[in-house]
Structure formats: structure tokens, C-alpha cells
Amino acid sequence: MSMVTKDRDLAAMDANLFIDAASVAMILGKGTGVSVRNGMMTINDFDLLEIAQPGQIVAATATGGQVVEILEVVDASTLDVSVPRVSESDSKIPPSESDGVDMNLLSFAPFLAASTTWVLREFRMDQIAEGSTQSEIVANSDSLKRLLLTHAIAEIYASAAAKSADDASLQARATLWKTRLIDQIEQTDLGVDVDGDGRADATRRMNVIILKR
Image 1: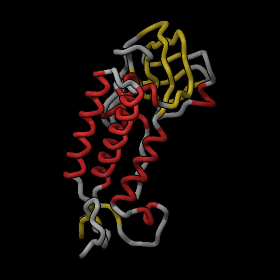
Image 2: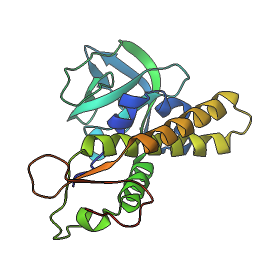
Image 3: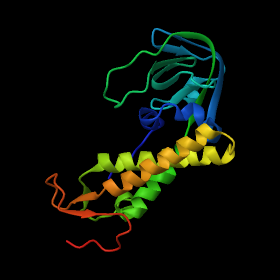
């Protein structure tokens, strides 16, 4: 079962996350005087070839600023970027042109890893994810991926809100995503395809100890 997620998947659901909750993100690189022209971003403050990779996010440090996903690392100072797309297969969306903007290359990878572990554990799919010889196949991986991302965003906002107790906006976002997570949990079953025909032969729900077929 593949549960691979990237920062761009988070941005597709809530791009503001990378500005409003940046206090709990990993800052991989800080760019000053960043420019965007013809869908290409120039950052001269660090070597992009050593740090950046497709699927990561570059976000303005100022509230309401621009957030973009990296499509390609062109060279040590140039990125091919897009406004975060709903799907990686969607066409590039050129971002607004700008000059002299402070932007950070940042990541919520630890939250994504923790949320992946949470989903696998709650549905008791740990062994399959680790290469078990079990023949079960997840028939609805898209639903599980959305649950994983919702959990990650809820955890990120909760962590950011805890660091800024007086920020009413962050508190509200944390509450909103907690509610969305609860709704997502109630809506998500794990479809198990035992015979490989692409259809779920059985389902699992969270916190159910035994799956009966």
C-alpha cells in the first residue's frame, strides 16, 4: 500500500498553512529578495540543488503572501514553480510575478510521517506497509490519503495554536480542522481487496479490533 505524501499535497488542501503555521515547520532555506518571472523563481541565498526538490513548498513570510509548489529544480538558483494544484497531474498554474520578496523553503515532513503512522496503526495496516506477505490490498487509497492529510493539517494547526495562544485566527483554524478530522474519520472506511479485482471485499473502521469477513 502506497501512502506517499508531499508538502504540495498539504498545500493543495490549505495553502495558507505554510504561512499561518510556519512557526512549527522545518525551515530548509531562507530566501531574501526572491523574484518570480514567467513561472520561474530565483533564489540566490542558498544552493537549491542541494536542498530543494519537486513537491516541496516555497512560501512568503508575510501574511497573505504567495505560496508555490516546486515543479522542478532547474539549477542552483532557479525553480520552476506553480500555484499549488489540486493534483500533481494538473497543468502548471503560473504564480503572480514579484520582486524582492522574503520567502522560505519549508516542510511539514515530520507531521506527514506521524500522520502516516497514525493511519496505518489505526487501521492495523502496519505490516502491509512494512512489506508483509499478506495479500490484502487497499481499494480506496485516495480516501485514506485524504484522511492522512486532514490529520496532518489538524495536528499542524493545533501545534501552531499552542505556541500562539493569543492568536484568535490560529485558534479558529485549529478548531475548524479538528472538526474536519472528526468528520473525515466518521466518513472513512478501509476497503480491503483480497482477490485483486479492484473492488473491496471487506471493510475496516478505526478502533475495530477484529475484521470479520
